[in-house]
Amino acid sequence: MIRLFKVKEKQKEEAGNAKGRGPLKKQSAGELRLHKDISELNLPKSCTIAFPNGKDDLMTFEVSIKPDEGYYMGGKFVFTFNVSSVYPHDAPKVKCKTKVYHPNIDLEGNVCLNILREDWKPVLNINTIVYGLYHLFTEPNHEDPLNLEAAAVLRDNPHTFRSNVKTAMGGGRVGDTYFSRCI
Image (cartoon, rainbow, N blue to C red; front, side):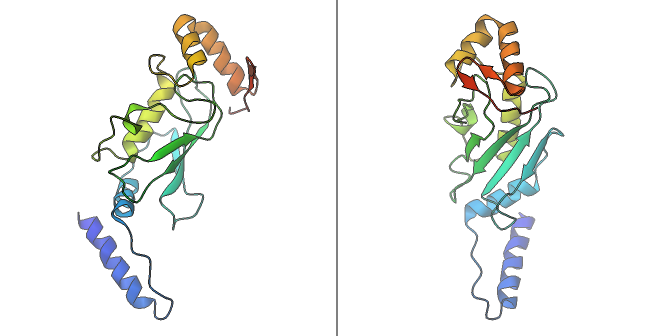
C-alpha cells in the first residue's frame, strides 16, 4: 500500500512542476494495480517483459517466453498483453504473436488458459498469467484444446507431436500450415 501512496504523491508533485505544460493524465485504478503488479514481477529466467510503446504505456506490453524444458525447449514465443482500465476485474487480453504448433494456442494466436477466462479472479496478477503461459509450454494440455489437430496428435502419438513441434519451430510446414522459425 505504501507504494501506491508514493505513486499518488509523485503525481501531485509532477502536476505542480508541470507549470503550463497542461494537466497530467490521471491514472485509472487498473493502471495503478498494473504498475504494482509489474514492480513486483518475479519472472522465470526464461521470460522477459518489454514495453514496445514506451514506459508511458504500461497497459500494452509483450512477454517473451523461452522454455528451457519440454517439447518447446529452445524456442522463443512472444505474447502481447492488453490490459483494460478496469483491471484486475477483467483479465488482460493475451495473444501469442509467434505462430506455434500447440494444442492450447490456435493459429491466430488465441490462448486457451483457464485463468484468462472462467477462472479469472481479481486476486490473480500478471505474474500468475506468465507462469500459466510458461506451464503451457512445459506441459501442453490436449484435454482443453484450441488447436484440435495438435491436441489429437499429442494425445494419440506424442512422438509424432514432438517431431511436428520441431519442424514448426525450425521454420517448416506441418500439414498445410507453414510456421516461421522461432528457435
